[in-house]
Amino acid sequence: MTCGTSSGSSTSSGSSTSSGSSTSSGLYRKIWVLALPTVAYSLIEMSLGLTDLFMVRSYGEAATAALGLGRQVTFLLDSTIYALSIGVVALISQGLAKGGATRKVEKIVAQSILSIALVSIFLGGLGAVASRPILSALQASADTVDYGASYLQIYFISALFFGVNSVAAAIFRAAKDPWIPLCVVVAMSVINIPLNYWLIHGGLGMPAFDVRGAALGTFVARVLGCVIFLVLLLRGRDGVKLVVSDALRVDIGIIRRIFRVGLPIAYAGALRNSARLVFLSVAGFSALGVSIHAAIGLGLQVRLLSVLPALAFQVATATLVGDAIGRGQPDEAERIGQRSIVLLGGIMFVMCGLIAVFADPLARVFIVDKEAAALGAQVLRWFALGQFFSSMTIAVQGTLAGAGDTKPVAWAMFVSQWLVLVPAAYILLTLFHLDPLGLLLSWAFAPLLAFLMLYLRFFGGKWKSIQV
Image 1 (cartoon, rainbow, N blue to C red):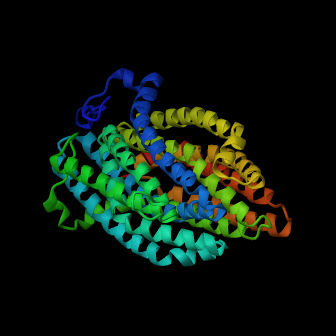
Image 2 (cartoon, rainbow, N blue to C red):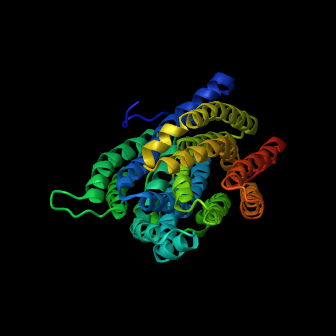
Protein backbone atom coordinates (compact mmCIF):
# COMPACT_ATOMS: atom_id res chain seq x y z
CA MET A 1 0.00 0.00 0.00
CA THR A 2 1.36 3.39 -0.99
CA CYS A 3 0.53 6.91 -0.13
CA GLY A 4 -1.34 7.31 -3.35
CA THR A 5 -3.70 4.39 -2.72
CA SER A 6 -6.58 4.38 -0.31
CA SER A 7 -7.22 1.37 1.86
CA GLY A 8 -10.84 1.48 0.78
CA SER A 9 -13.17 4.30 -0.11
CA SER A 10 -15.69 4.93 2.56
CA THR A 11 -18.21 6.08 0.01
CA SER A 12 -18.38 2.64 -1.54
CA SER A 13 -18.08 0.61 1.60
CA GLY A 14 -20.88 2.57 3.19
CA SER A 15 -23.38 1.49 0.55
CA SER A 16 -22.64 -2.21 0.46
CA THR A 17 -21.10 -4.89 2.58
CA SER A 18 -20.39 -8.49 1.81
CA SER A 19 -21.72 -11.22 4.01
CA GLY A 20 -18.19 -12.31 4.76
CA SER A 21 -17.29 -8.94 6.19
CA SER A 22 -19.23 -9.73 9.35
CA THR A 23 -17.39 -12.99 10.05
CA SER A 24 -14.71 -13.04 12.72
CA SER A 25 -11.87 -13.24 10.20
CA GLY A 26 -13.43 -10.50 8.07
CA LEU A 27 -13.84 -8.15 11.01
CA TYR A 28 -10.32 -8.82 12.29
CA ARG A 29 -8.98 -8.02 8.83
CA LYS A 30 -10.98 -4.78 8.55
CA ILE A 31 -9.77 -3.62 11.95
CA TRP A 32 -6.17 -4.57 11.20
CA VAL A 33 -6.10 -2.93 7.75
CA LEU A 34 -7.22 0.37 9.27
CA ALA A 35 -5.16 0.09 12.45
CA LEU A 36 -1.80 -1.03 11.02
CA PRO A 37 -0.85 2.26 9.29
CA THR A 38 -2.00 4.20 12.35
CA VAL A 39 0.06 1.91 14.59
CA ALA A 40 3.07 2.67 12.41
CA TYR A 41 2.24 6.38 12.57
CA SER A 42 2.03 6.23 16.35
CA LEU A 43 5.25 4.26 16.73
CA ILE A 44 7.10 6.82 14.61
CA GLU A 45 5.78 9.63 16.81
CA MET A 46 6.75 7.68 19.93
CA SER A 47 10.22 6.98 18.58
CA LEU A 48 10.73 10.70 18.06
CA GLY A 49 10.10 11.25 21.78
CA LEU A 50 12.50 8.48 22.77
CA THR A 51 15.09 9.82 20.31
CA ASP A 52 14.86 13.22 21.99
CA LEU A 53 15.40 11.57 25.39
CA PHE A 54 18.49 9.84 24.07
CA MET A 55 19.83 13.03 22.50
CA VAL A 56 19.56 15.09 25.71
CA ARG A 57 21.01 12.42 28.04
CA SER A 58 24.47 14.01 27.85
CA TYR A 59 23.04 17.06 29.69
CA GLY A 60 22.35 14.89 32.76
CA GLU A 61 19.39 13.65 34.81
CA ALA A 62 17.83 17.11 35.04
CA ALA A 63 17.51 17.30 31.24
CA THR A 64 16.07 13.77 31.07
CA ALA A 65 13.59 14.57 33.83
CA ALA A 66 12.67 17.87 32.15
CA LEU A 67 11.82 16.19 28.88
CA GLY A 68 9.91 13.40 30.63
CA LEU A 69 7.92 15.77 32.83
CA GLY A 70 7.47 18.18 29.93
CA ARG A 71 5.85 15.50 27.81
CA GLN A 72 3.34 14.85 30.58
CA VAL A 73 2.43 18.54 30.60
CA THR A 74 2.05 18.57 26.81
CA PHE A 75 -0.29 15.60 27.05
CA LEU A 76 -2.86 18.01 28.48
CA LEU A 77 -2.84 19.71 25.07
CA ASP A 78 -2.23 16.61 22.95
CA SER A 79 -4.96 14.50 24.53
CA THR A 80 -7.52 17.31 24.26
CA ILE A 81 -6.85 17.76 20.54
CA TYR A 82 -6.83 14.02 20.01
CA ALA A 83 -10.13 13.63 21.87
CA LEU A 84 -11.85 16.29 19.77
CA SER A 85 -10.50 14.52 16.69
CA ILE A 86 -12.37 11.39 17.79
CA GLY A 87 -15.58 13.42 17.51
CA VAL A 88 -14.54 14.24 13.94
CA VAL A 89 -13.99 10.54 13.18
CA ALA A 90 -17.46 9.62 14.45
CA LEU A 91 -19.25 12.31 12.44
CA ILE A 92 -17.35 11.81 9.20
CA SER A 93 -17.46 8.00 9.25
CA GLN A 94 -21.21 8.02 9.91
CA GLY A 95 -21.76 10.75 7.31
CA LEU A 96 -19.83 8.94 4.59
CA ALA A 97 -21.61 5.66 5.39
CA LYS A 98 -25.03 7.21 4.81
CA GLY A 99 -24.13 8.29 1.28
CA GLY A 100 -25.37 11.37 -0.58
CA ALA A 101 -24.05 13.65 2.14
CA THR A 102 -21.09 15.24 0.34
CA ARG A 103 -21.86 18.81 1.36
CA LYS A 104 -22.50 17.81 4.95
CA VAL A 105 -19.16 16.01 5.09
CA GLU A 106 -17.39 19.01 3.53
CA LYS A 107 -18.88 21.26 6.22
CA ILE A 108 -17.78 18.86 8.96
CA VAL A 109 -14.24 18.89 7.53
CA ALA A 110 -14.14 22.70 7.45
CA GLN A 111 -15.63 23.18 10.92
CA SER A 112 -13.27 20.52 12.31
CA ILE A 113 -10.23 22.43 11.06
CA LEU A 114 -11.62 25.76 12.29
CA SER A 115 -12.70 24.63 15.76
CA ILE A 116 -9.60 22.63 16.60
CA ALA A 117 -7.33 25.41 15.29
CA LEU A 118 -9.01 27.85 17.69
CA VAL A 119 -8.82 25.40 20.59
CA SER A 120 -5.14 24.75 19.85
CA ILE A 121 -4.28 28.46 19.85
CA PHE A 122 -6.07 28.98 23.16
CA LEU A 123 -4.53 25.97 24.91
CA GLY A 124 -1.11 26.67 23.42
CA GLY A 125 -1.10 30.22 24.74
CA LEU A 126 -2.28 29.08 28.14
CA GLY A 127 0.36 26.35 28.28
CA ALA A 128 3.18 28.69 27.28
CA VAL A 129 2.32 31.08 30.12
CA ALA A 130 1.83 28.35 32.73
CA SER A 131 4.85 26.15 31.87
CA ARG A 132 7.20 27.22 34.66
CA PRO A 133 4.56 27.30 37.45
CA ILE A 134 3.35 23.82 36.47
CA LEU A 135 6.85 22.33 36.61
CA SER A 136 7.51 24.01 39.94
CA ALA A 137 4.26 22.56 41.31
CA LEU A 138 5.51 19.10 40.30
CA GLN A 139 8.34 19.45 42.83
CA ALA A 140 10.89 19.45 40.00
CA SER A 141 14.43 20.58 40.78
CA ALA A 142 15.56 24.07 39.77
CA ASP A 143 17.63 22.74 36.86
CA THR A 144 14.73 20.57 35.68
CA VAL A 145 12.39 23.57 35.77
CA ASP A 146 14.83 25.69 33.75
CA TYR A 147 15.27 23.01 31.09
CA GLY A 148 11.59 22.07 31.03
CA ALA A 149 10.09 25.56 30.94
CA SER A 150 12.13 26.63 27.92
CA TYR A 151 11.17 23.39 26.13
CA LEU A 152 7.48 23.75 26.91
CA GLN A 153 7.18 27.38 25.89
CA ILE A 154 8.46 26.60 22.39
CA TYR A 155 6.39 23.41 22.18
CA PHE A 156 3.16 25.22 23.04
CA ILE A 157 3.82 27.92 20.46
CA SER A 158 3.63 25.15 17.83
CA ALA A 159 0.21 24.02 19.16
CA LEU A 160 -1.71 25.41 16.16
CA PHE A 161 0.24 23.24 13.73
CA PHE A 162 -0.12 20.20 15.96
CA GLY A 163 -3.88 20.73 16.11
CA VAL A 164 -4.29 21.04 12.35
CA ASN A 165 -2.10 17.98 11.76
CA SER A 166 -4.09 15.91 14.25
CA VAL A 167 -7.52 16.77 12.90
CA ALA A 168 -6.38 16.34 9.29
CA ALA A 169 -5.02 12.89 10.12
CA ALA A 170 -8.35 12.04 11.81
CA ILE A 171 -10.27 13.17 8.73
CA PHE A 172 -8.34 10.84 6.43
CA ARG A 173 -8.64 7.94 8.88
CA ALA A 174 -12.39 8.47 9.10
CA ALA A 175 -12.43 8.22 5.30
CA LYS A 176 -10.63 4.86 5.66
CA ASP A 177 -7.33 6.12 4.26
CA PRO A 178 -4.83 5.94 7.17
CA TRP A 179 -1.89 5.74 4.76
CA ILE A 180 -1.94 9.48 4.07
CA PRO A 181 -1.18 10.39 7.73
CA LEU A 182 1.53 7.72 7.80
CA CYS A 183 3.27 9.15 4.75
CA VAL A 184 3.08 12.66 6.20
CA VAL A 185 4.60 11.64 9.54
CA VAL A 186 7.42 9.84 7.71
CA ALA A 187 8.18 13.08 5.87
CA MET A 188 8.06 14.99 9.14
CA SER A 189 10.42 12.55 10.90
CA VAL A 190 12.97 12.77 8.09
CA ILE A 191 13.23 16.47 8.93
CA ASN A 192 12.67 16.19 12.67
CA ILE A 193 15.37 13.76 13.82
CA PRO A 194 18.48 15.30 12.22
CA LEU A 195 17.20 18.82 12.87
CA ASN A 196 16.61 18.07 16.55
CA TYR A 197 20.12 16.63 16.94
CA TRP A 198 21.66 19.65 15.27
CA LEU A 199 19.68 22.12 17.37
CA ILE A 200 20.26 20.23 20.64
CA HIS A 201 24.01 19.86 20.26
CA GLY A 202 24.86 22.65 17.83
CA GLY A 203 27.50 22.63 15.10
CA LEU A 204 28.16 24.15 11.68
CA GLY A 205 27.87 27.61 13.17
CA MET A 206 24.66 26.83 15.09
CA PRO A 207 24.80 27.21 18.91
CA ALA A 208 23.65 24.32 21.13
CA PHE A 209 20.08 24.89 22.35
CA ASP A 210 20.12 21.87 24.74
CA VAL A 211 16.56 20.68 25.52
CA ARG A 212 15.09 23.63 23.67
CA GLY A 213 16.49 22.21 20.43
CA ALA A 214 14.06 19.29 20.60
CA ALA A 215 11.11 21.69 20.66
CA LEU A 216 12.51 23.89 17.88
CA GLY A 217 13.04 20.96 15.52
CA THR A 218 9.56 19.66 16.25
CA PHE A 219 8.13 23.11 15.49
CA VAL A 220 9.64 23.10 11.99
CA ALA A 221 8.50 19.52 11.29
CA ARG A 222 4.93 20.33 12.35
CA VAL A 223 4.78 23.32 10.00
CA LEU A 224 5.85 21.02 7.15
CA GLY A 225 3.19 18.45 8.04
CA CYS A 226 0.52 21.13 8.27
CA VAL A 227 1.30 22.41 4.77
CA ILE A 228 1.13 18.91 3.27
CA PHE A 229 -2.17 18.05 4.96
CA LEU A 230 -3.85 21.32 3.93
CA VAL A 231 -2.78 20.93 0.31
CA LEU A 232 -4.24 17.40 0.21
CA LEU A 233 -7.50 18.47 1.81
CA LEU A 234 -7.88 21.46 -0.48
CA ARG A 235 -7.48 19.17 -3.49
CA GLY A 236 -9.86 16.62 -1.99
CA ARG A 237 -9.62 12.81 -1.91
CA ASP A 238 -11.39 9.78 -0.45
CA GLY A 239 -14.69 11.66 -0.25
CA VAL A 240 -13.31 14.42 2.00
CA LYS A 241 -12.41 17.96 0.95
CA LEU A 242 -11.69 21.27 2.62
CA VAL A 243 -13.74 24.16 1.19
CA VAL A 244 -12.17 27.42 2.35
CA SER A 245 -15.43 29.36 2.37
CA ASP A 246 -16.93 26.79 4.76
CA ALA A 247 -13.99 27.24 7.12
CA LEU A 248 -14.51 31.01 7.25
CA ARG A 249 -18.03 30.69 8.66
CA VAL A 250 -18.79 29.28 12.10
CA ASP A 251 -21.47 26.57 12.08
CA ILE A 252 -22.50 26.18 15.70
CA GLY A 253 -24.59 23.10 14.97
CA ILE A 254 -21.69 21.09 13.54
CA ILE A 255 -19.23 22.29 16.16
CA ARG A 256 -21.71 21.31 18.88
CA ARG A 257 -21.95 17.80 17.39
CA ILE A 258 -18.17 17.47 17.25
CA PHE A 259 -17.84 18.62 20.83
CA ARG A 260 -20.73 16.43 22.02
CA VAL A 261 -18.69 13.36 21.12
CA GLY A 262 -15.18 14.73 21.62
CA LEU A 263 -15.52 16.81 24.79
CA PRO A 264 -16.25 13.89 27.17
CA ILE A 265 -13.12 12.17 25.88
CA ALA A 266 -11.26 15.46 26.25
CA TYR A 267 -12.53 15.72 29.82
CA ALA A 268 -11.38 12.15 30.37
CA GLY A 269 -7.96 13.01 29.00
CA ALA A 270 -7.75 16.13 31.14
CA LEU A 271 -8.80 14.17 34.23
CA ARG A 272 -6.29 11.44 33.46
CA ASN A 273 -3.35 13.68 32.62
CA SER A 274 -3.96 16.22 35.37
CA ALA A 275 -4.17 13.32 37.84
CA ARG A 276 -0.85 12.09 36.52
CA LEU A 277 0.66 15.52 37.02
CA VAL A 278 -0.53 15.40 40.64
CA PHE A 279 0.86 11.87 40.80
CA LEU A 280 4.23 13.24 39.69
CA SER A 281 3.92 15.92 42.35
CA VAL A 282 3.25 13.23 44.96
CA ALA A 283 6.33 11.42 43.68
CA GLY A 284 8.25 14.55 44.65
CA PHE A 285 7.78 13.51 48.28
CA SER A 286 9.82 10.40 47.61
CA ALA A 287 13.24 10.16 49.26
CA LEU A 288 14.62 9.12 45.88
CA GLY A 289 14.64 12.74 44.66
CA VAL A 290 15.35 13.52 41.01
CA SER A 291 16.00 9.83 40.30
CA ILE A 292 12.32 8.95 40.73
CA HIS A 293 11.28 11.75 38.35
CA ALA A 294 13.84 10.61 35.77
CA ALA A 295 12.66 7.00 36.16
CA ILE A 296 8.98 7.92 35.87
CA GLY A 297 9.75 10.22 32.93
CA LEU A 298 11.38 7.28 31.15
CA GLY A 299 8.48 5.01 32.06
CA LEU A 300 5.97 7.47 30.67
CA GLN A 301 7.88 7.64 27.39
CA VAL A 302 8.35 3.89 26.98
CA ARG A 303 4.68 3.25 27.79
CA LEU A 304 3.96 4.98 24.49
CA LEU A 305 5.11 1.73 22.87
CA SER A 306 1.72 0.43 23.94
CA VAL A 307 -0.52 3.44 24.42
CA LEU A 308 0.02 4.84 20.92
CA PRO A 309 -0.79 1.56 19.12
CA ALA A 310 -3.81 1.25 21.42
CA LEU A 311 -4.93 4.71 20.31
CA ALA A 312 -4.53 3.54 16.72
CA PHE A 313 -6.93 0.68 17.38
CA GLN A 314 -9.28 3.13 19.05
CA VAL A 315 -9.44 5.23 15.88
CA ALA A 316 -9.85 2.17 13.64
CA THR A 317 -12.61 0.82 15.86
CA ALA A 318 -14.36 4.19 16.07
CA THR A 319 -14.25 4.47 12.26
CA LEU A 320 -15.71 1.01 11.65
CA VAL A 321 -18.30 1.31 14.43
CA GLY A 322 -19.35 4.72 13.10
CA ASP A 323 -19.62 3.24 9.61
CA ALA A 324 -21.77 0.35 10.89
CA ILE A 325 -24.00 2.66 12.95
CA GLY A 326 -24.39 4.96 9.95
CA ARG A 327 -25.59 1.99 7.87
CA GLY A 328 -28.05 0.97 10.59
CA GLN A 329 -26.10 -2.14 11.65
CA PRO A 330 -25.66 -1.90 15.47
CA ASP A 331 -25.08 -5.65 15.88
CA GLU A 332 -22.19 -5.49 13.43
CA ALA A 333 -20.85 -2.54 15.42
CA GLU A 334 -20.93 -4.67 18.57
CA ARG A 335 -19.05 -7.50 16.86
CA ILE A 336 -16.42 -5.00 15.67
CA GLY A 337 -15.98 -3.78 19.26
CA GLN A 338 -15.59 -7.33 20.57
CA ARG A 339 -13.01 -8.28 17.94
CA SER A 340 -11.07 -5.08 18.52
CA ILE A 341 -10.76 -5.77 22.26
CA VAL A 342 -9.58 -9.35 21.63
CA LEU A 343 -7.10 -8.40 18.91
CA LEU A 344 -5.59 -5.50 20.83
CA GLY A 345 -5.47 -7.58 24.00
CA GLY A 346 -3.25 -10.15 22.34
CA ILE A 347 -0.94 -7.52 20.89
CA MET A 348 -0.65 -5.62 24.16
CA PHE A 349 0.05 -8.79 26.14
CA VAL A 350 3.10 -9.40 23.95
CA MET A 351 4.27 -5.78 23.87
CA CYS A 352 3.88 -5.12 27.59
CA GLY A 353 5.54 -8.45 28.32
CA LEU A 354 8.55 -7.49 26.20
CA ILE A 355 8.85 -4.15 28.01
CA ALA A 356 8.88 -5.99 31.34
CA VAL A 357 11.45 -8.54 30.16
CA PHE A 358 13.81 -5.97 28.65
CA ALA A 359 13.30 -3.29 31.31
CA ASP A 360 16.91 -3.37 32.54
CA PRO A 361 18.67 -2.79 29.18
CA LEU A 362 16.03 -0.20 28.21
CA ALA A 363 16.66 1.77 31.38
CA ARG A 364 20.45 1.63 30.93
CA VAL A 365 20.14 3.09 27.42
CA PHE A 366 18.42 6.26 28.64
CA ILE A 367 19.71 6.69 32.21
CA VAL A 368 23.47 6.85 32.80
CA ASP A 369 23.61 6.43 36.60
CA LYS A 370 23.45 2.72 37.55
CA GLU A 371 21.24 3.11 40.62
CA ALA A 372 18.86 5.42 38.79
CA ALA A 373 18.77 2.96 35.87
CA ALA A 374 17.82 0.12 38.25
CA LEU A 375 14.99 2.27 39.58
CA GLY A 376 13.96 3.02 36.00
CA ALA A 377 13.75 -0.70 35.25
CA GLN A 378 11.51 -1.27 38.27
CA VAL A 379 9.21 1.56 37.14
CA LEU A 380 9.09 0.16 33.59
CA ARG A 381 7.86 -3.24 34.80
CA TRP A 382 5.03 -1.80 36.86
CA PHE A 383 4.09 0.66 34.14
CA ALA A 384 3.92 -2.22 31.64
CA LEU A 385 1.37 -3.98 33.85
CA GLY A 386 -0.73 -0.85 34.22
CA GLN A 387 -0.49 -0.08 30.53
CA PHE A 388 -1.98 -3.44 29.55
CA PHE A 389 -5.23 -2.54 31.31
CA SER A 390 -5.02 1.05 30.08
CA SER A 391 -4.82 -0.24 26.50
CA MET A 392 -7.87 -2.41 27.04
CA THR A 393 -9.70 0.67 28.29
CA ILE A 394 -8.74 2.54 25.12
CA ALA A 395 -10.05 -0.33 22.98
CA VAL A 396 -13.48 -0.13 24.62
CA GLN A 397 -13.43 3.66 24.21
CA GLY A 398 -13.13 3.17 20.44
CA THR A 399 -16.47 1.40 20.25
CA LEU A 400 -18.23 3.90 22.49
CA ALA A 401 -16.70 6.85 20.59
CA GLY A 402 -17.78 5.50 17.19
CA ALA A 403 -21.34 5.35 18.48
CA GLY A 404 -21.11 8.78 20.14
CA ASP A 405 -21.50 7.38 23.69
CA THR A 406 -18.52 9.06 25.35
CA LYS A 407 -19.87 10.45 28.63
CA PRO A 408 -19.14 7.20 30.54
CA VAL A 409 -15.48 7.54 29.51
CA ALA A 410 -15.13 10.79 31.49
CA TRP A 411 -16.83 9.25 34.54
CA ALA A 412 -14.54 6.19 34.48
CA MET A 413 -11.47 8.44 34.35
CA PHE A 414 -12.68 10.56 37.25
CA VAL A 415 -13.25 7.55 39.47
CA SER A 416 -10.09 5.65 38.56
CA GLN A 417 -7.69 8.59 38.54
CA TRP A 418 -8.98 11.07 41.13
CA LEU A 419 -10.69 8.72 43.57
CA VAL A 420 -8.13 5.91 43.32
CA LEU A 421 -4.75 6.80 41.74
CA VAL A 422 -4.00 10.13 43.44
CA PRO A 423 -5.20 9.41 47.00
CA ALA A 424 -3.82 5.86 47.00
CA ALA A 425 -0.39 7.05 45.83
CA TYR A 426 -0.25 9.74 48.51
CA ILE A 427 -1.45 7.48 51.33
CA LEU A 428 0.79 4.54 50.46
CA LEU A 429 3.86 6.76 50.01
CA THR A 430 3.51 9.23 52.87
CA LEU A 431 1.56 7.30 55.51
CA PHE A 432 2.70 3.72 54.88
CA HIS A 433 6.18 4.73 53.61
CA LEU A 434 6.02 2.36 50.62
CA ASP A 435 8.69 4.13 48.57
CA PRO A 436 8.41 3.69 45.61
CA LEU A 437 6.13 0.62 45.78
CA GLY A 438 3.10 2.67 46.85
CA LEU A 439 3.37 4.83 43.75
CA LEU A 440 3.70 1.83 41.48
CA LEU A 441 0.85 -0.18 43.01
CA SER A 442 -1.48 2.78 42.60
CA TRP A 443 -0.42 3.25 39.00
CA ALA A 444 -1.16 -0.38 38.11
CA PHE A 445 -4.57 -0.66 39.81
CA ALA A 446 -6.24 2.53 38.49
CA PRO A 447 -6.42 1.46 34.80
CA LEU A 448 -7.78 -1.96 35.78
CA LEU A 449 -10.70 -0.23 37.48
CA ALA A 450 -11.32 2.04 34.47
CA PHE A 451 -11.36 -0.94 32.11
CA LEU A 452 -13.90 -2.82 34.21
CA MET A 453 -16.19 0.22 34.36
CA LEU A 454 -16.17 0.83 30.60
CA TYR A 455 -16.44 -2.82 29.67
CA LEU A 456 -19.63 -3.06 31.73
CA ARG A 457 -20.98 -0.10 29.72
CA PHE A 458 -20.06 -1.84 26.47
CA PHE A 459 -21.60 -5.13 27.62
CA GLY A 460 -24.86 -3.36 28.59
CA GLY A 461 -25.39 -2.26 24.95
CA LYS A 462 -27.03 1.14 25.56
CA TRP A 463 -24.40 2.76 23.34
CA LYS A 464 -26.01 1.19 20.24
CA SER A 465 -29.00 3.56 20.44
CA ILE A 466 -27.10 6.87 20.90
CA GLN A 467 -27.77 9.56 18.28
CA VAL A 468 -25.05 12.05 17.22
